[in-house]
Image (cartoon, rainbow over all chains, first blue to last red; front, side, top):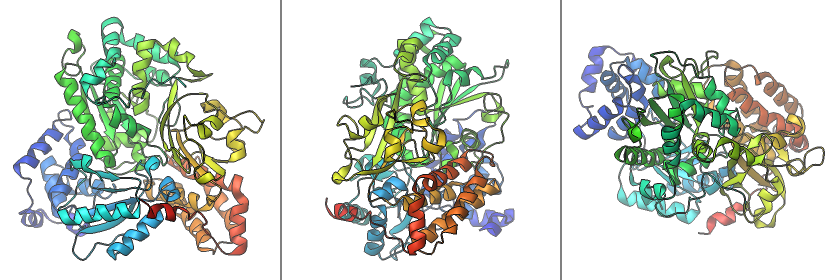
Length: 193
Length: 445
C-alpha cells in the first residue's frame, strides 16, 4: 500500500484512469468543499473520502486516494495518513455489506459475543473475513452509541438494534436478496428492520 | 416528576420539523437574544445559570465562553462536539435525532453570544443518518430565515454546517476534533494555546457538547438565575442520562440534577430496577472512563449519605470511594457480571482508540489489554494484578490528552473495588463467564 501511495505521478495517472466521480457525485463533492472558507478546502477531505468509498466499491484504493488528492490539490500522503487513521475507511476490498457488530461494554453485557458467534457460524466466516460470494464482511466495532438498544450492529447507514438471532436472520436475508452495496452515506436509514 | 427542559417534547409527532418545533415554542431564544439582548448579556446569563459542560468534563460553560479571544478582524468559530463516543453514552444521538432543531437553535443563540458568523457541528461518522437529519433541519432553518443573512432583520448573520467524522473516539477531545475538522488525523494538540485563542484554522474557537449548546436555549428563555434554581448546589439544571446494561428500562432520561441514584435505578420513572429479578453488582456512572463503583458505594457515599446524581455527590470521596458524573453514560451490571471481562472490553476499546502520539498511552493500553486477556484465558498470575496497577499508574498524567487517564481510571477502579475477582481467577487459573443468560434472550424475537 505504502509503495503505491508514494508512487510516481506517471504511475498514478495511468492507474487512475478509471477512477472519476460521476456528475452527481462531483456535485456533492463541490458542495462539501464550499462548506469551508476560501483556502480551507482540505477540511472537506474526510467527507469526500466517504463519498469516494461509496462510489468506488466500498473501499479506498491507492488510486482512489490519489484521485481525491488531485481534486483537493493536496499530496497523496495527506490523504493516506487520514484514510489510515479512521476506522470507517476500508483500505482493502470488502463485501457489499460490511457488518460492524459493536462489542464494547453495554453491548457485551447484552450478548454481543453471541451475536458475533452466530453470524460467524451462519456466514461461515471469521471476524475480518468476507464471504466467498463477496456479499458480507464481518467486523467488530467499538461503541457505536447504541448502548440502550444493545446488542447492535451497523451496516451502511443503518443501525440494527436490540438484535436477536431471528432479527439477524431477517436482516442478512434481506441484504442478500437486495444484493446491493451498502454505504455509510446511504439515505435509507429509515428502512431499518 | 422532575423538570424537563431539553427533551420534554420528544414524543410530539413531527417535532423534528421546524413547523412543529416552532409551534411548541422553538427558536424563542433566538428571538429573545437577537432582539432584546447584547451578545455579552447572553454570556452573562449562561454564567449565572451555572451550566457546566455536558460532554463529560463539567467545566463551567460561561467561563469557557469568556475566555474566547476577540481580536479585531479575525473570525471566531463555534464548533459543536457531536462526536459522542464514550462507551455507555448515547444521549446526544437521541437529542439530535428526535429534536434536531433544539441543537440548531442553540447553535444560533450561542453563536450570537460569541460573535461567530460561522459554526460547525462535528458529528461522529457512524451517526451519518443523524447528520442527514441535522442537515434537513438546517435547510429548514435557512428557508425560514433563522440562518443566513440578517437574521430577524438584525445585522447578525450566521451560517451553520455539519461535518461527519469517520470513526475515532479521540476526535471527541476538542483539539483532536479541530484537527479532524481541518482534514487531518485526530491527534490532540499540545495546550496551550487553547482553542479559545487558537482553535479552528488558528482562529479563536469555542467547542461545546451538543447537550451544552441545546441547554443555552432554556437558559436564555427563563434567565440564568431561574435555571440555577433547578438542581442541587453547583450542579444546576437538568442532565441527560444514557442508561444501559442490566436494567428493565434502558434509554435516555432527562433528570433534574440531584435525583438520588437509588431512585434513578429502581423507580419506574427511570431505569425500573434490575432485569430478570437479579441483584445489582456495580455501576459505571458517567461513561467508560469514570471509576466503577460497587453497589454499596454507588447508592451511598462512604459517609453513609445517599448518593445523588450530581457532579459533587458522585464525586464525593474522590476516586477512593467516589466516581464522576462524566458524560452521564450510566451502565448498570447485575450480580452475574464479570468485572474483569467488562474491564477487558473497556481496555480493548482504549487500546483501539489511542491515537498513538504518546508512548505511555499507545503502549500502555496494549499491555493492559494483553494482561487482561491473560485473565480471561486463565493464564494470569497473582502478580499480574500488581503489574496492571503499575502500568495504569504510569499512564495517568503522562499524556498530551486525557485519553490516557480515561484508559487508566477504569483499570485502577476495578482493581480498587474488585481485586478479589482478579485474584480468584489467578489462583484458580480458570475464568468462568457466568453472564450467559442472555443467550436465551437472543433466541427469542
